Length: 294
Image (tube, rainbow, N blue to C red; front, side, top):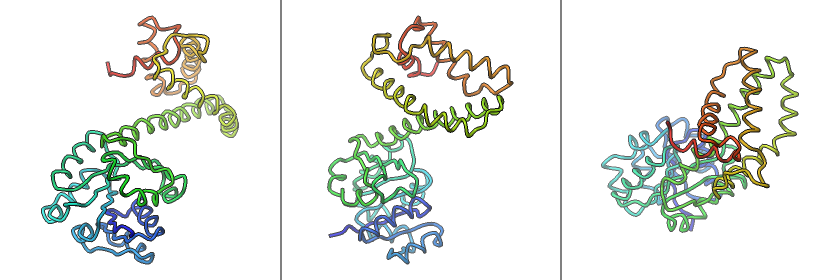
């Protein structure tokens, strides 16, 4: 028996979620503040609810994808809505923080609903595909009982822990990795433009060196997890080697008048480690100087 599901919020991502569920034969009710955004889904078999209350009332599972947790509260933390929540499962797929997810879990539990919090690690075109990745945390039994629903949303939907905040924490960590590469690319573009290097050449060289960078990142994570901060026979790169090359980058940027906002943060972390006597340590030793803001 297919589940009855309400999708609250039908922007680009919410609509993609609803389409994926409909494609697998689920009974889907949708609601959006702007009804016009939901109307294309009616052509695919979705029922458009005239109100959030009616959407929630019609469903066993409520999937929420709006702008933030405050928007969720404004829509669903309503006396009439909460009166029909008992026994239902709420799946919050709105971007948020770990503490926000924990507070939400407590609120929903207080109103008789089960709760799962998720982070969508994909653009809308990946939803419903084998490569679609969504991290889900919270009540493991609720995930297992409805795994067919989650599989409809993507082939790589994972339950990552009982703590409702775990998915959002991993989301922030993975975004930090992504932004590290993107802001690094901006810095690289600025250097190439200043040195009159064609950006197509930068792209070709990045493709060639990307596997090396990925290997360094994997090694950094593994060594930090193991607490192996001293240089040893398996060290791929020491702080000393990196800092020497870093000085060349800074010298080039200063000579060309390139903004140092991005590399300024790197320099501060290098300096903390060096002041603590870690110059000859493995690059992973830098992880000891980023855990707490100073």
